[in-house]
Length: 452
Ligand SMILES: [Mg+2]
Image 1 (cartoon, protein in one colour):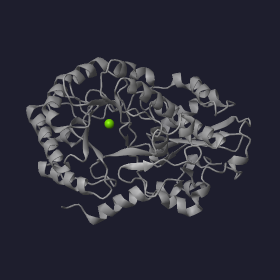
Image 2 (cartoon, rainbow, N blue to C red):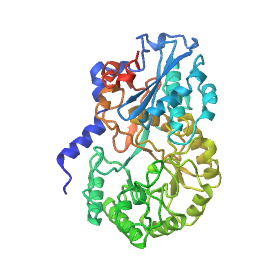
Image 3 (cartoon, protein in one colour):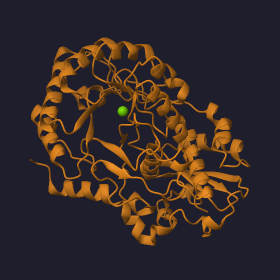
């Protein structure tokens, strides 16, 4: 076992550091006071409230939106990607929302929802929606889950995506079969005890760079920048390599840790069917985004339907999809077995909840995406995850790219995850918020007035 002690400590620190910021200013008061220090409980519940401004900052690797009101209550939302162009897109909606009552979340969303789009353009609408719920919860002095029908569960399950060389998780030493096995044994035995792990593979992972993996001869430099992954016919060698690596991981993980694969987009339908058939003996949790996915502005439900009917492996997609309408065929036709809408891309928390209910009617399971939504995005996943029906499996664990996020966001439990579960907290709104004094030092020069 080459897994270093320092990496292990980093993992534990990362996964348990949520209380770090909380200890700085005493987070017992989080959410119980508005932004001018007035206790929310003393505010008349029917007091008028209007949106006065919408602000956006790029903090670290995330766009963060702040919806400002005349009642001294602000709402926040966070997502990806950290492109400054996204700032202009978020501000595009400002004129539609100024003067509106943010606690009428749906009325606000009706004004802006139709002007959104698939990832990355769903982010703008979605994180504004989260900020509106944050305000609505604070104004009502209730956690968001209470406004979405209340708790179904007290603890929300989360799964970990293995990202090689990431500071969060357990690194894999290399790409040989033994490396996959050794990594799986370490993951299985790790004290944090995640009950599901998702591994990027094939055209979503390192395999696509292995010579002979596929027949494609378009270099990455020549590929369109909007499609970060290769799209090519797979070789027999490539397919056998993946089956071998999956077999090694399953042998190491055993049957107590579920294994999911993020394995595209990039596969042609015929390859996808052959690969799924070859992987049927391994009881995978799901195969994700084999045909479409990240940054694909389309769904291809009929292709997914053929794939799903061709294999016993549960087929999963949905992280880049915007709005319930684009899940209609996937769910209505039972074209997939699991879906993964991202609350920071699909149109918001309530959009995700609506889709989960529709999916439940069709026996389709929920595994929402969210790895890059930051700590406010984590809170959004917990709030809406608490309300989802029984088809909810787990959401993708969300950890920040920079450790300082744990110092500027208050209110998360410590440790955040225990046995793959996060206990649902009861503070108003999202129940987490910025330590403004600490957060200000991470604002870019052009965003200096974000908290003013
Ligand atoms: Mg994915």
